[in-house]
Amino acid sequence: MKNTLSALGQSLLQRLPYEYWIGWRYTRAKRNNHFISFISLTSMVGIALGVMALIVVLSVMNGFQDELRKRILGVASHIEVRGFDVGLAGWQGLQQQIQSIPPKSVASPIEGVAPYIMAQGMLTYDQAVQGVLIRGVLPAQEASVSELSTQMKVGQLKDLQAGQFNIVLGSDLAMALGVRVGEKVVLMAPQGQVTPAGLVPRIKQFTVAGIFQVGMYEYDAGLALIHLDDAAKLYRLGDQVSGLRLKLADLFMADRVSRELVQALGPNYYVTDWTQQHANFFKAIQLEKRVMFIILALIVAVAAFNIVSTLVMAVTDKRADIAILRTMGATPQAIRKMFVVQGAMIGIIGTVSGAVLGVILALNIETVVPWIEHTFNVQFLSKDVYYISDLPSKLMWSDVTAIVGLSILLSLVATLYPSARAASMNPAEALRYE
Image (cartoon, rainbow, N blue to C red; front, top):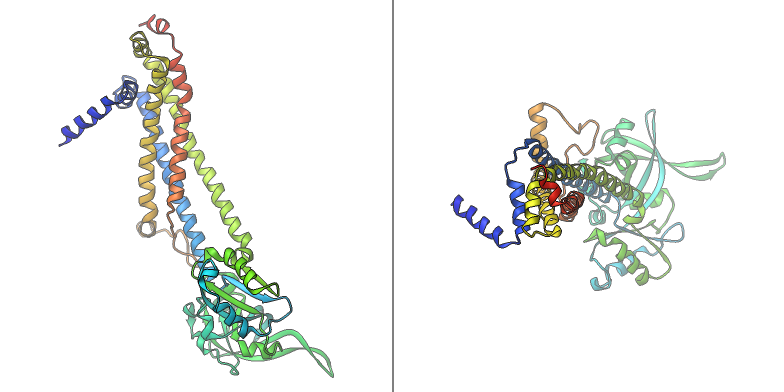
């Protein structure tokens, strides 16, 4: 079977133009100068390692970006609709209007709409004091626009009942205050009330009904939830809310949906989406990804340009062969193609090997990393330091295509000088010392 496949391969190669066949033979030939073979092997291994590293690192960065996006948008909204005044009046009618918009009029179906009140406050317990963002929510509707109900460590979101003045805290916030479920904290609103003694802040005692943890310090250490009606009473908003939060079926269509909502709702509302609210954060991640791509691409470039050394020495080693081929009628273009094929095969073999290994490792990194940690008794991301303690990976075939294309292109560029030198060789001069 092996001999049959080898014979078939040879038959196919022989049907190609002779310069391609000779170039392939030069790649496989056993040379007297083993140093050239060693450099060729080093070039292949370097290209393979560079391509594999690029694929794995970009996949891990894609995984981190996707995981952070999920955690941020598990608490933040895809789209927010607010009024231009302090509060949004008549939000029930606006909510029905948004929910009744036909799916064809927007780019992505709206899965949920919920009102919210956002305000600042100060929580105190015993001697501890913490500034927080207070979000008033309707627990039944909040589950349709966020994942907080699934991120509860203790208690449930539905424990927020109107008039009972219960509060749900982030895990780091509860730890900073030293408070547990069932204990009472005091919430001070910065909006004061006038008394005979002067302007004093409004103060209300709340009972801790639950603790959540989403894995983002910004929310776990600075966000507290209360019922919408309790927030309206404390901050004296009456029937107004801060705005409406929307969740989409496809979060990447938020920009387009927000523009279409502006047209559908008119100029009396202010519409923002998550790409505007967290633009700097995700732009920083994209910039870091591009920089890492450039840095690791230099590894591939160094390995690819080792092909230059390989081919220069191969041209010197094959001076007599080149001269004989020229005297037999081979054109300079044919000689050039021979060495381009030889260098290209080194680059292609290294690139394909690295791409296969990189894809396999990227798809199984969540299994490989724990095995390494267990085998060598190390931990790359400590749970005591990092919220994301596992290395997430998301393989994007567009990245793989770009990396493979870049590697092959660099390999081809590396063949230009040596092949041009071989094509310009004088047959008589080459045979003089043979």
